[in-house]
Length: 73
Length: 274
Image 1 (cartoon, chains in turn cyan, orange):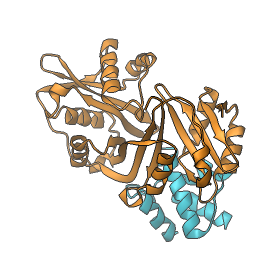
Image 2: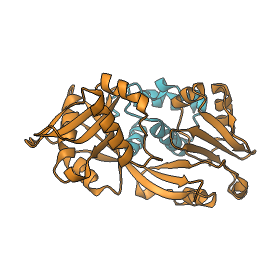
Image 3: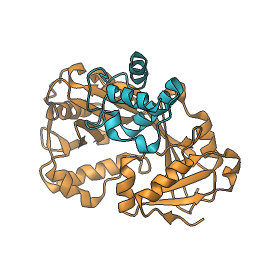
Image 4: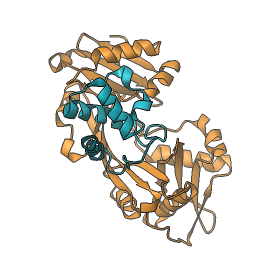
């Protein structure tokens, strides 16, 4: 999880990923951020996220993203 | 190849899953927007082989290109329709400037237009507002003021990369209080700011000042008013894109407390008559 938080901070240093739970619903992350996150996750964790897994709920918090990674591993 | 309209979201999704491969060059970050563009009949595939796909979004003054490039060797054979086309490459700061992607687009006839950078801030990190007694800021409350602001934005900003405001939008801009205007003490209009609220983020869509009033902190007064109008708590979030070349605007946002998000877009254009 720490590795993921570091990855997310690298992409959007202005966002409080430890506490935000509505990253997509609140409009904090946009589609370019999501695609950047997916690409970094692929490089770091070797997990490929497909288009049908781009459900906003999977990206609303660091924890949700972490759960998605665990599910796809 | 003649542009072929994309009729359904399934058609779009199939196209994306077929062409978005691991090392693909793409600038298609449409996602949720694709559905509404398709519903409005504004998204077409303009040419397609087994390796590369090009989508065109019909805009007000030009078309916007989205691409999926998997094989760069066959790019030379792409034939685009005779129309003005803009495309944008998003990238994460100067360290990741898209040199190769830019070269690919040059190869198919695109030229550099401009670069925009994204900035953001939350309320608690912003400098307090300062008082400027020479200017009065208020929401536009009559149609003629909104129309004046629309003309100012449309003539100040790049028509290809920015969001051109259509005449039929002015009623909504007035009703939704989206235009802040700056007047001098005699009531002369000096500048305007167009705000857009997306979920819980307040976006600056356009800010423009008439040439005679530039350098007099009118933009800062509009920015201060915009921030205060959208202040709910310390976590209130503000975002904007600014042209990298516009030093005065960049300095204004930075001194207010806005931070660059390591997110930029290189706009490139292919004009039919050049």
